[in-house]
Amino acid sequence: MALECLLVTCDPTLLGQVQSGLGMHGASLHLRQDSASAIELVSRRHLDGLVVDCDDVPGGTKALPELRSTPANKHTLIVAVINGSTSTEEALDLGADFALSKPIQQTRWSSILDAAVPKMEREHRRYFRYEVDLPVRFRNPLRQSFTARMQNVSEGGLAIRLIDPVRLEGVVVVEFELPTVEPQAFHAKAEVVWSDSFVMGLRFLYIEKHSGVALHTWLESLEGQFHFRESTQQTTC
Image 1 (cartoon, rainbow, N blue to C red):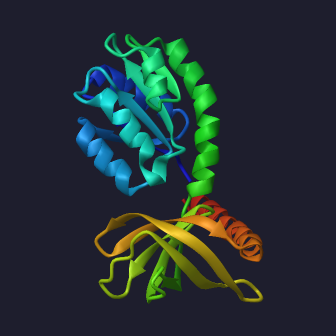
Image 2 (cartoon, rainbow, N blue to C red):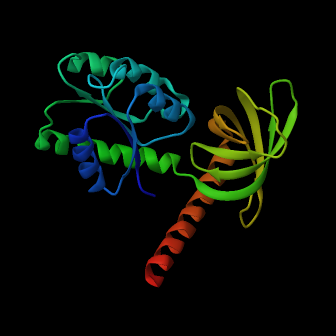
């Protein structure tokens, strides 16, 4: 359940500092050297934290509101690294949660991590996807029905594999049977937030009360299974 973060920079010094700091918290790091590819990545998947080199990557500052507005990363924590052209106030107004000035002071970076990592961990827990394989039914506003296979699920949404090459869009009704001791029907409304070939990600917008309780119980069961497998693997190694 390691954190996944994105760093947008061409600066090897910044890369080393961010890599070292996040590595101490067990986080993995994706690297993009331009704002366009960073926006493309963030548009199709959730990440737990973003570090953006605003002034030394072309379009870095302008990318902040675009990164913040992507459906899967509206609440993702963003650290803006500034180097004279962008002010702290501007970076925060454009969507950053923290601003860090170059040259990076280790004490300042450490203090940001102390405040940011607990928030990222809470967000990660909400988004962490457990791998499952269940049939799912969808209904769009035109009351057309579609069938898919669930690939993973979290408190915030799910990813699906489409059985037929049908494109779902917008808000849909989601229904599936929770594989609990006493199987329960799950009903919710969800929004398609990203798609990649035959896989799509959906974010829950509204979950019926009894479905929410049942989902929470099921996720707790999946988390217990996940930790059991991890501990078993560590013992085996």
